[in-house]
Image 1 (tube, rainbow, N blue to C red):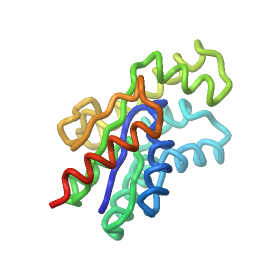
Image 2 (cartoon, one colour; image 1 turned 45 degrees about the vertical axis):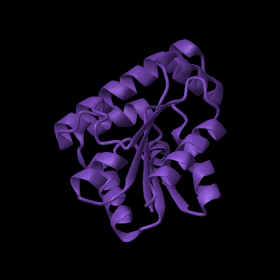
Image 3 (cartoon, rainbow, N blue to C red; image 1 turned 90 degrees about the horizontal axis):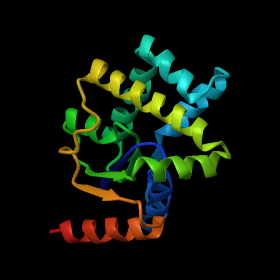
Length: 178
């Protein structure tokens, strides 16, 4: 089974991806790490890399091409990325597509705690990052990142811990098996 997990920063998608992969015995590929590594290599922030990617489409294109390549060559994998579901959909790659979300305030609080950064700075950086991604995805792929119609399952994680989210996913996957 091929699974995609998408959602905005701080929604819990990476944590859920790792837990789900362990339970299912599947390999997980978390593309946000590639973006973070690229930012680190360039000695810039994620926000700055996003702004650079607005001017240089090759940054997103290389990461998104890897999503498609990995998805096509692996029947049993979990792909975590903002565009994984859309990339699979656009390339007719079958996958169970999950969108994990949380309210802006909850996400900001999680990111602030995770990165040990002040709430105000996280709010500003996250807003800039989301705006940049929305602009790039629309410009480069004609994808409206707010369109959830591509997803098989949408989960709000405001009041759920990662184990609760994983349990919902597992029950849904089990219920969809023929």
